[in-house]
Image 1 (cartoon, rainbow, N blue to C red):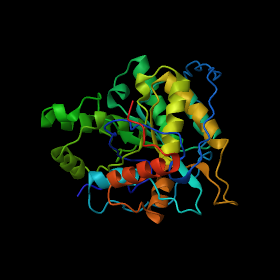
Image 2 (tube, helix red, strand yellow):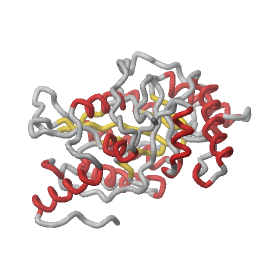
Image 3 (tube, helix red, strand yellow):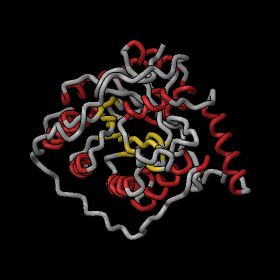
Image 4 (cartoon, rainbow, N blue to C red):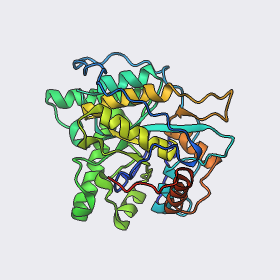
Length: 334
């Protein structure tokens, strides 16, 4: 049985969505559209590389608390996608959860700004590292190794994204296992912890690989917000797409790539946008955003599970809600 949710602090595993779903900024299922984007890019320039990372203030991010519950007892990928959609929202609950994950890093060029934003807003994120970047003794590898160490020391979750981002299902089985194990060793060497989270490149996973992950005690965690940010060069375009998907899904697990400078800029803007419409616990029925770590996201999902047996049924319900409230069907994916 492949466990889908991690049971220890600092390690996760996930599976990429096969494609970004079309988003509709209409406040589906009772939400209100609040999208307001400034098209001119006024975000700060990428900072110069800090050759010596500053000391870590471990008090900035609170302890994540006890392990979260197992939510996929059927050990089903379909079920795992549904879990990634997060909690259901009763009419009296306006809290919309958002949690951030970053793939393909770390990069000394972008890590300073990512960590600065996370620290400033007291956000715990999840990072899925490429093992190849952490090996070697050249200057770049040493700097990358140090930033990986700092990301983990700051309290963020760290996961395995293979050694060099090759599609595992296209490789001989022995080579696929090397991709997984060599990355795990490199990440453990950098952070001091062997990751339990795994996210396969391109979302490619088959039953044999699932068994290999099981044998290694690796965990699967999926997500529901993916705007294909690596294919976009305009931070505001990335921002608009993220806002639209979040509005449509009413929150979710956000996938971004911290090695991509436009994505890093869009991330900072998105955080400010979310916090400008923050959920107020003193008025829990009013809709607002709440940025949480993955542990809190999963605990909330366990407390209020989706009333559907599959993600497909949830999508049908969302489409029907849009059609009913707007007199038109959901747009086709672009």
